Length: 328
Picture (cartoon, helix red, strand yellow):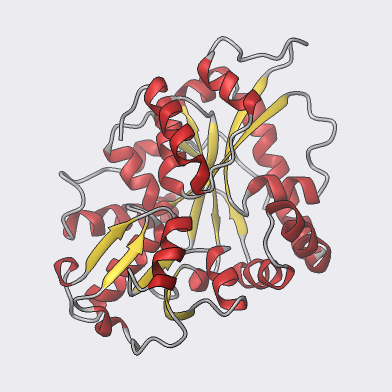
């Protein structure tokens, strides 16, 4: 997973057609690390995002107004390329699930978790076509499953099949970005798609897929705001302010479900009914990092070791930075 800045830029230009939104200003900032401050002298936070993530939340809640710093956004279709961007130092921070963090850390990424939230895990799910004969996780034996390697969808699938008495070798994973996987599911190239919100809600509400296995009881529902060590060292107060805005925006969003759902649909370009479905059922709440949360993350890492996806056991404790407390 360790990549150079040049290789990362090549990755962006070759995968943008698959759903990665890259602006010219962002490319310039990635290529020229000296542009850490705007011409006005204000600090710049290079924020990574995933579809349906932080930018829509902050914009809808008016939390991007009166910023004492500038934000350069880069959107990614999934956690894996966001993790690579963090690893390359191409972004300062970004939202990432507990499972993808494990892969980033195992690859030596110099990142820390500075904020944590928990959501209802239903929308992290294994989807099949509406006419599929598959009914249970056990039916996935010998089938092709499309997902992103190391994603929370990948994790939920592994948990589901092991709970059904299968082993990882009993299924065939095809590691594809979400835009390619939904096409593969429709064409029959894969039998199932392991994904997350808002992709699950979009697939359900448009009639493209149904939920075979949902993540409840399989996934912790934990996701994080991760930041690079370099950004924490240079922009700690900026990151602290950014996290506080995200937490406030989350509280606002559940006080204004209809307004936020409509704004999210417009901002990220998904059907309004999908936006409301995925948002309302996630019930996301930010929380402070404590020993119990760290222990949950350790169990995720231990599971990946047990199924052979990590070369060696991983101690997650040094990954958590508790210097960013939030009001919950």
